[in-house]
Image 1: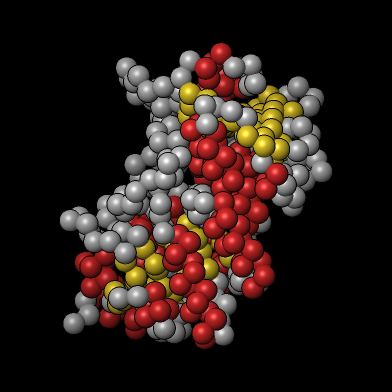
Image 2: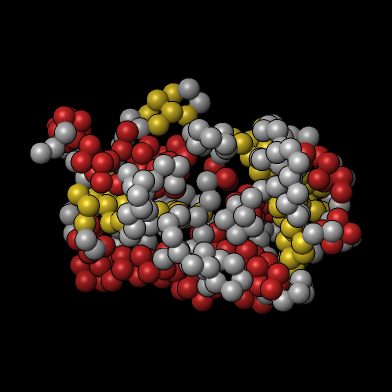
Length: 368
């Protein structure tokens, strides 16, 4: 029997586009929780409440841990939990969200968690092929944990002309202070700061950095080399400028943890046009995602890409973009951004297991 909430939602929104959510696992504070919860119930941004513009009709869930929320949420909102991706998409849906983060999966030799994003993507493509469809599709965070898979996903989206939205939530969130480069800005050096696990959280800093880098004069040219260093070598290396870190740390919102002995980590990036960038993973100094830049004029600026660490309200921006994607069938920003960020992350982790060597990255000659 449907809950009163589910009956009311069904009666009030008979004409809303229907969507399916394909989830790794749905438990408190997981990506499924902070995304799907807002997709089902609505969200607040900048003090304004937004009611759902889409109707979620089906879930496919890969894992059900002891603190699973999928079953109760499905019952509460009248969502069907399906046994396969095919079944979830066969319910007359108008859009699909792959939330391929979290859950219990092994890591690769380089440290990537083997989330089944590519597997879910392939299952969706097979459904599209059999039914002659190409529905708007969202892929949460990066494409895949292997470059060949990531490139294949990107190539298929482009070839099929699928309305597509992917990537981190960080490029969408608030910037404190506000910072947006005009197109054609002349940049000399960039730096972004993250914290916690390098693969899971460092990726967000990579993509927020790429969001800023792509605005530079001449547009994006791709990446020539990547290197990862750890420990004391981070602050001994002369690749990056200390004044950019000083600028970034000025904009911390959350106090850093006390007496944290986590070693620093860095991913260094050389772009094809000479721009250089650094991602610093500094769990002992920050609990925010921070950014700083030097323009060729010498001007230094910084900002905090603010995420409301425990409230997760910035996920309202992700839900809004997914709703817009389904309703307009327009890709909101270049999928090349996420592909290049994905590649930087993979090359950085590969350098880490290859004794911090600089790795040439001809596969990342990506212009947009």
